[in-house]
Length: 383
Image (cartoon, rainbow, N blue to C red; front, side, top):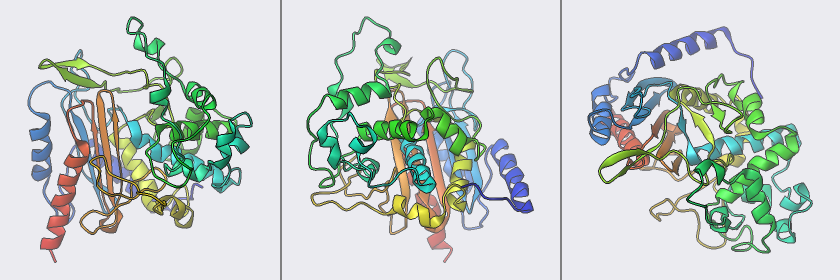
């Protein structure tokens, strides 16, 4: 629920906007790393020349202290990446999908223990054991829609063979089982988050992009952020995804799975991610108590959440939650054709790093953690 703003909030917002527009600024603490240290990390990673690159945001104590773009948004115009450039978030989208569900729970229109068959009456019987909570924390056991899709015709434009959210639901309706008993194991599920986006549509009576706009993006003034649907809306200041093939950069912006929404369809910029981070910090959309469900790690009977490299992790609703170097953390990463993204929030140190890349060869999570290390190291030295 949006909160009334005291007069000083607007002064702070103006200051935040000025800092974003001005490029990079040094940390507010004498013990913080300077901008040159952060800049060196990303200049080395992106490299010289007019190449696809990255956008980097560092927030400390609620204020942006470093904002900078590296490389170009696309290779035809060679437009430089800056804080307004919009990148496809890929799986960083999931935190917005989870927030949408949590807002419907806040409204009293949905409950975390509601079942899939209770929402979609024609869903197969196996959906009786799958709850909203299972979908949110990746314990549903739903089959991966990527594995169920028919092979795309390589002779057709990719936009003509892309699967939609409704297509994912149809595929799952033709199945008869899950990978495991819901709630017994953890298995990262894009299928589950596509279904969550459709649940938002079903319960709210509005298209998912419209719900996101009305309940999250507009209230937070994330005015450039969109859940992209080709032919229905546009992406301002759009970055296009790229991959390197035979030593040359090629635009690789779309794939057969690029049109789904709930699991990865949002485009946004550093400017708007700063507004999102501020809302999380101030509990603008949901109270701290209401957020607890989403930041409580799931417990399963067998195994548990894991990072991409297989190390043990923790997961809530759209967020990984395992600590870093003993510090409380909320984080996520995104990977899709031509894009790599990451957000690292260290609430105990009031530190957030966002890295958005329009090229497939960078590891934004590792880069973001290098910046986290700079700040945590500076904090330890200052004690």
